[in-house]
Length: 388
Image 1: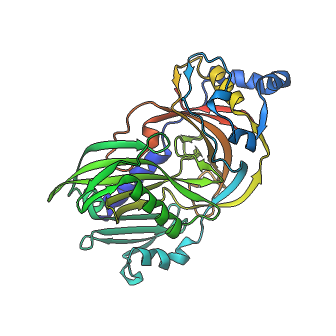
Image 2: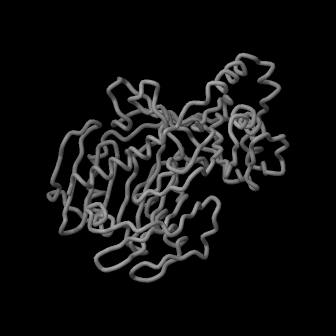
Image 3: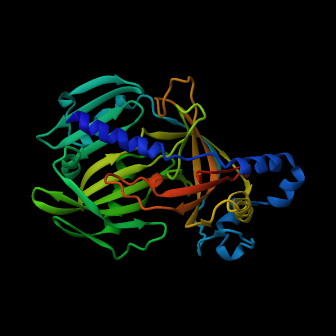
């Protein structure tokens, strides 16, 4: 039982991290190399703006002749508060404060069944078929909690029948959408608000806040009949800029992540009954933030994407977001992503997001399954994409 849960959660984490993102096509790299060496081209093709100016930029301000590329009707940066270069790290002694998490999930210290060393540090585990409850904690801040319908699903006692509805909360209005739980109907926006409040109270990250960005309504077949389950994906935001959760790729060695995706997963069996929580691969914290006062403006970023990528592929951009691309730093070639205390660099980028296919996953919400992206570094203008 414990092994099944760990395999499922490992699969989920690997799916989060290994979305198959590729480097910019060779032709684009060559052109960008020439671009970087030619200051005249740089001065002609990139202009800069302040954060305040970007915040006020709208779709009507963009005047770029596009080739094989279409932009969304709305571009909104109004929630942007600041841009910075971030130095982050994973927690390294989080198990010392585990009594708070144990109390939150109503598990006694003496009931822990495993305390062992893993490849990325120490882990403690609770697993009870009687309570239908599983909890794993690691010293890097990783928390995985499973109960209820999710516990039964992982243990092959519940079948996933399908995804009934999908909502991208950046684009879709859910104010009137409802889900019929076993104990009655609830507004999806209402449960979303409860989830964000729960995260802020019980899983706080200093200087950051949580934004639930995606919601799925799933149909699960249980021994008592069909039930609805609500799955959420939550992103971490610093001053209006979220941590990347759309793409990741391996370093050239093929053994370590060069760019990582990071986010939070939750399932709700009823309005007030959360049956799954996972904070991906650990808990990140901000160690320092170096303010960036001048950035590549949005029109220049669009021009770069149009020139460097759209000439090779037809691009329908569904949304454009400011994100922090997360680059893990390793001390040795043996270290894995999210070892306790591992440093991570956060670089601000414009993320041009293309919804390419449907995410048909039975567990969680994995944006890597459905999206392609083009990143434009807000400081350097460097372009990177996972478009093949």
